[in-house]
Image (cartoon, rainbow, N blue to C red; front, top):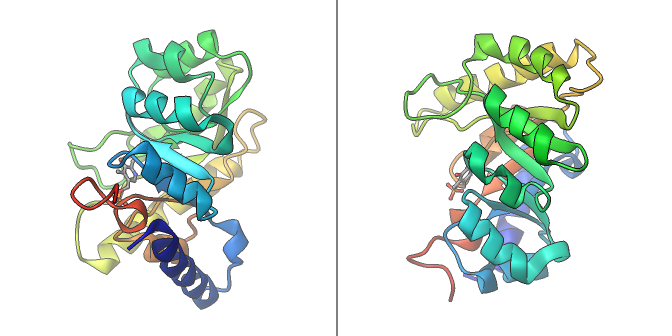
Length: 229
Ligand SMILES: *Cc1c(COP(=O)(O)O)cnc(C)c1O
């Protein structure tokens, strides 16, 4: 299927998930994760009306950015090595993977203007996942006051790869509760309004639990075995 058809299906699912919990679909931003596919395929997403694109590696990001530039809003969703910050920080609009002080420090040093960041949280506690443990999130964000170029707009997580809907729901609920806790601190550098959670296999559940940014690759633009048609 082409991206436009996929986008229509996803838009439908977003609307249904929203109406279930009486949310306005306008509150949900869909990010097309293009890490598996070609620049051409990424352009199809833009033609289908999805202007938010997500990449998880510096090389893939710069390749697509060089051809698409201002036609998209760029989300960096993968873990970012500090030494690579200088190569991407001027081009990305939103970083979804802030997970350590050294990265905040480097962003503060290299960025010309404030960078919108999600702090990544490892809710599920799996060793394989990046992100802060839940209990460390608030102190970490308080500490970020020392880095004025870092603006915390929300929290991000990746749910565990499980079928169990209740487990997924519990993960998303915990991130939301943590977001509420940080937001209630009313810190000028950390409005922390948003929730980046939900991927191809779990985004409708994430939306029911309050996601404001969903990151969809496979079911929107496809993956390498299928994409780039
Ligand atoms: C790859 C990736 C996604 C998209 O995954 P799909 O299952 O293909 O939708 C979302 N978020 C992050 C951080 C990713 O690395």
